[in-house]
Image 1 (tube, rainbow, N blue to C red):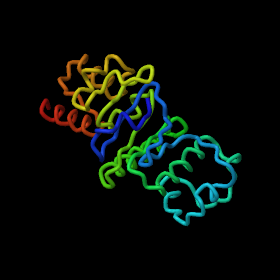
Image 2: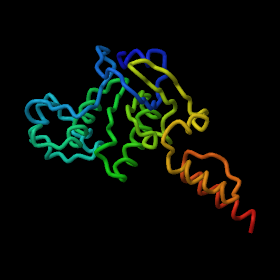
Image 3: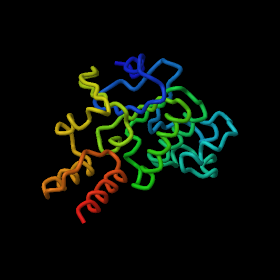
Image 4: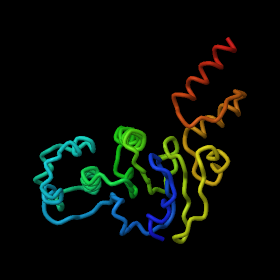
Length: 207
């Protein structure tokens, strides 16, 4: 199944978590697919002489990378360069293929904010292809499960907690369950800050 077919009738300005097997190639001109693409030549040549270097800063790369050949770059750098090119191309759909794998925790937090900004402020559809639910738990508005190139389930954000037992649980879910086992009546939260606020409120009410 071509990735474009899955999102034909989906709303703009959304972030989707896509898990499973799928054909990431597409002939749809509205899509930019970010992979560790080994282009030929330098980054500047790959950018097709574009002078828009602001995209480099957005993906945490320095301007001197423009003169580097693709063979000199790590997989993480190749993905970031591919993302910078996608931002220059300014397509409606941005598809990320296991982008988080080469990122440290600080970078993951930064790019999560970037995905949200692209969706909320620029009306982009951000599609995150991953098998790690924890990397998209707090930002994806819908989880799309694919098996053997066919969609077998689509879970909206409101139903995440009904589905979570079938996946690797994010740390925030494990922590919430532990708090309940210790006798603390607390609701489900996807955002750590909101969870901490809830714990603080309960602490204040019980003091």
